[in-house]
Image (cartoon, rainbow, N blue to C red; front, side, top):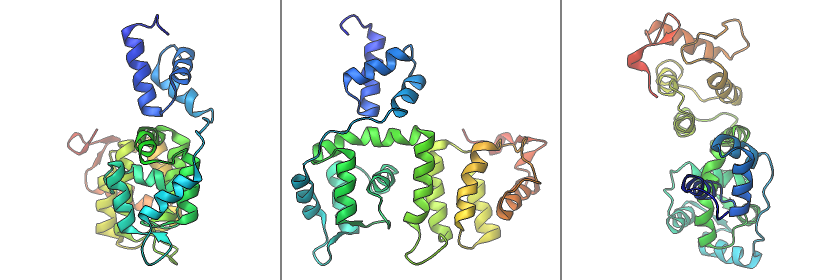
Length: 259
């Protein structure tokens, strides 16, 4: 690796920072992809990476640091302390990725089993390792399959216990958080439409189908099929876009477009 040029070394360091990969693994992925990031990321994520062994005793010490004094769980105050320790804003989307790894059943709660199992799966048994793992956890959102899994997970994680649907305000907050990663230009219009026309809880079907809509339908609706099997709410949304001049003759109005 001593013969690498400066540009290649910079790419190597950047790849390692984003993915948490070792120098050897990063070099192999970049070299096999002719030093193109996109191909290297695809190669890296398509092959499961070995996790470093995590010490359960150290993880239990971390759990005891954050668990609630009255119940055997980590609650909102403990999660806030954890976020402070790993230098992450509690509202940062990376905490959703952390919760996904922990298979957490409910927002702002970690059971002992979820916390210990999640940290073991991530190969984390210290705060230093946790902080070092954050760039990799964040990078998982760039993987299409993992993003879909995280998106699907978010519905059950964010809804109130015992409820089948997701409260509208919560759904809107989650969509704004998740679609900020994908730069879907219609997300603000979707949220405004829901507040103006729907104002009800969101079903799992609507939640799932919206991601498919955002992925497959052009923002200008040029390939939208009104006879397709979309939920009625999405059909109403397309009518709303046309009625309000947001879509004009098969293109997104320039003043409405957000990159």
